[in-house]
Length: 536
Image (cartoon, rainbow, N blue to C red; front, side, top):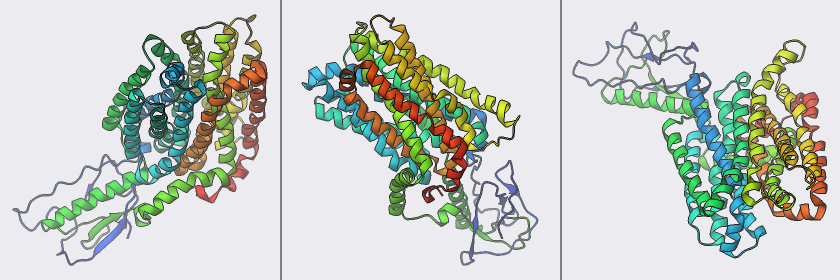
């Protein structure tokens, strides 16, 4: 019968009150389901065949703890590593643009052709998580993080030393593949280690890290390119990525519950097998046992584990299935994709506007991205407290239930900052208006973008639980695919439509999408009840 589900703070309890009986290798093996609540019992100590028999040391099981029960220090270490990695994944995407003019001269191609490097990076960033994120839900987070981190590091080195334009595009694509997990899978990691009620703060920090990195890239890379060459943009990244990867290899721990449980079962089974090799066949697993048992542990996931080929197929299809069959994922993906694209439009529009309208140098125009970074810090601080305010002002004082839709209240109010910022930027970018005004507008739009980003990650993590990485990968695909295209057409769009016209067009579309969280606040529960089978 299954063992009692009584939590224990120690890996084993001792149970020596049962009389030993003789078991041998011919005795049948009992397979039992293992859970985190399973109370384990050591075999009786008086049964070994003789004092000369070698003793087999019991495994340490304190490492196989449910991630949501880790100590705050352990969770903070994991979150810190993940957020730093996220910053430099976003940094790698945007830091490319300040060196574009130097690359165009060296590779003898046009500026638009050089900007394809952003597109190729984003394509890798968009496609890879569609397979890697759900695969991590089966095989574990840590091996996927480390393997993709190595790819990111190697390809960044290739970007720094490549002598050809084609080599740059290929290296950028695979750099996007490698860096993608540091953005898309961190949302799943946060869902792994934090309960829903504690998730807003880490999600706010993660979302802030992703947006902050996009602004930090051109801010620092502009000065690097001006003081040295474009190749040092990649050399600096290589050093930082190498350090982050080394820290991750040492300090990062697996966070998927089912993967940890399978590892625990393997450790116990290996111990039992080692005991049996020296003649110790008695394995007691519960106080109610009346006779010895040869026990092996299994988990529900290991019992129904599909072949690797089927797992790979499922990993590849699940995010696409969610994207095209689940209304919540589809509209959130559209909302996040557009807002993220605005950040990439800024990579081209800010230098264009500030150099032509205000006479800035390339380094000065890239310094304008400091506005985005500062706004990101402010919005992150607001994001960390907005849920507590929501609970105090609404949930605890009214009949509103604490459901996933409460995560959207902040974006309902802050989301309109995106169209406001875009309109403000477009119609204040004039020589007669001080440059600080459109700079502030960029910060306002960034605050709106971050509120959208935070709402999307929080809501998807709450609703999709263990499949959160797949749902986040689906919206990430749309977000990065669209974000990779806009830098190619931004200059032409702003020249053809003027700064005011192009910004008004984008602001109008952003205003329409501002209704997405309002719709989900009122009808989200109905959508959740009719969720796609892909998420179940």
